[in-house]
Length: 490
Ligand SMILES: *Cc1c(COP(=O)(O)O)cnc(C)c1O
Image 1 (spheres, protein in one colour):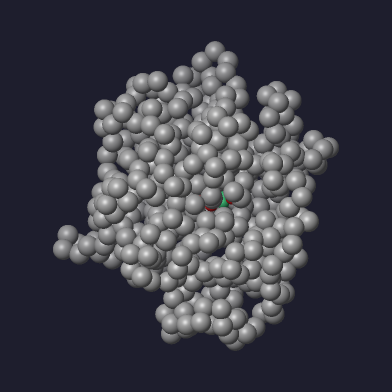
Image 2 (tube, protein in one colour):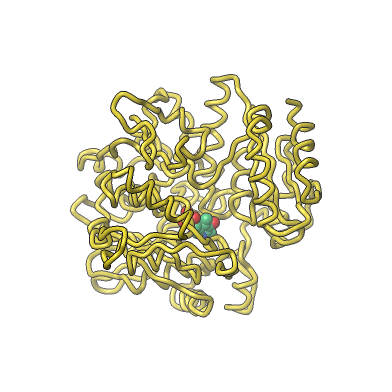
């Protein structure tokens, strides 16, 4: 399996980039995102064979189509080490933990069926664990082979940073330096990250806001000499291995919800950076019988606007709202370029031009209107995409309704998904909503909606009382570099 960039790098037949080569990197050298030159296909026979596999072995079957340069035995060791009931133990029952991403039927009436697929039973109670846990093991494997080291440097306002730390803790050859805005995260999120005592995890609380943290990451990363010398890398949502790891649970969801391959399902995905649903798109391109891929956004509706109108218009910071589903508060969707590449039928020159236009003019227009950049909007339905939007009042109402009708408490992001899914139900097509976090993570809104606390999984009861390990720093680039260098010893 060979990879190319959405903007043309390595696109010719005599150039080759492998899975292992892009595993530890981020953007392609031309600023684009990596994709396979062609999507591997699944046959109906394979789907039948996969129906009864464990999650770990299904992950192995899907991944080996993409990671063709990792020996099968090694890859299977990695998936079996990653997807265990012990790692996904925050499920409601032992049986659910075994299933890794268990399904629960919410609503079944006549020909309509609504199902929840839990992706949030990992160590940080959010779906980012699904891919990040695999990445931790893949990174350790690749670095050990090369006898290399990697220092992950990033900024977080919550979910991504904690998922990365829990995936990389204790891993050989890896250190994590994670910046977060001092005293700006919820007590629960802070405790989750800062209570880690592993010597390879460094939590840095920056006296400032999240944007200050991100600016510091940019400033340090722009110093190429420092970056190379200190072996600095990232684990952001454009990482290809993260996307592929997410493809697996679309297969699992489909295979668990159906009994034969002539049945179709749809997925509704609470979306921000388009990483999660991009994996659904790839599963569909591989031949998984998905009817619709429904993008659910919150008040930050960049993606909903595109899927309704064909106009992609990124937002400025001042136009990006802080909402009660904060992990979907994005101003531009970093994985979106992968879908646009497919929508434009692999025309890398046009993809490059459109995303340059995002930089210079803040967006592009594929509506087909006079003066637009193209008319590909009319092909959206052919890719199964549709969308909807949910706001704070919808979240409260949906949390209450799901609690009352089905006796289940859902988190705010999942509530956005359910609200939008209900608007897209079709006869005889099971609708699967991806549950992207457990409610305990966003307790303030659960209190607002239900007047009580969300249940906490075992082991999290007193997390705020655990000893915390972190360093407070000013927004001082030189001091940051010296902190990193001191701790890497490089
Ligand atoms: C990251 C995240 C999302 C958004 O996923 P994308 O891949 O960025 O679209 C949704 N819900 C939760 C809880 C998340 O942590």
